[in-house]
Image (cartoon, rainbow, N blue to C red; front, top):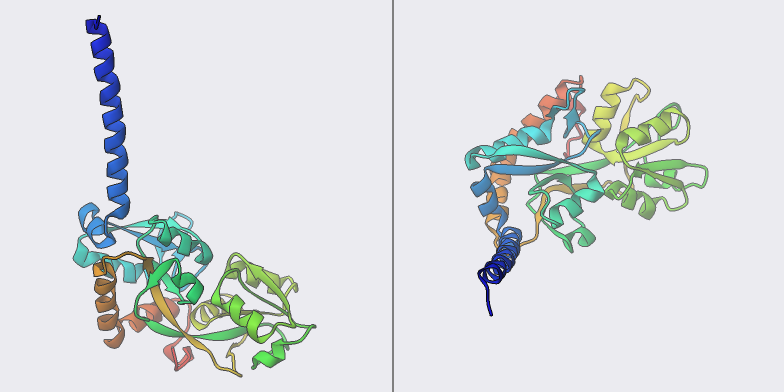
Length: 278
């Protein structure tokens, strides 16, 4: 005999199961929702931010983020009517953040075949020449000068600088660090002779630290890599198309260089100090 209590219990179980199925379906729908639609629906643009990466990102003691990438992100968000939400990460982990859908956009990423297996890249918004940042009498100009067992060279872990260092100076004593600031501290404490970095970051370090007198663009070969926005790989191309249109307009109108130049100017770096092939 089916009592009222059993019937209510059965209905309760069915209801719980139905809610669970609905929740699963909603979660799947959210995961598969194109980024373009999600940003316009939620009015939130989730941006990967990397501490110690001026002039792109700077975080003050109050937790407020600033920098060239923040200004660019604000400009991207404006026509979408979205506000920024920051996802603090590292450059290597930012690829995972984008691939998993934890973030919508990542700045200052160089496209590589390995990264392209996980995420998609936009058009370049500038070319980034790679440089040597060293102190004292050690002033290398070519990769071959680094390719010596006596040289202690470092780079940010998982960055293109690390790849270049291992390719062109495999004999050097190579150390990697989580951030550029950690590498700078290694040089200050005489644990390393130089650090390999993209030009803008190296110029920012030089402006803040009198220990470094020069930033040398690496030669033999001279390497300037495309710097792009990284986004989640998805079948719907509207998000990438929107960002590509934004990049093309702001790059060729000179606006991106204006944002970058404004951040460098805050630290005393003049426009003529920036490598011409940037």
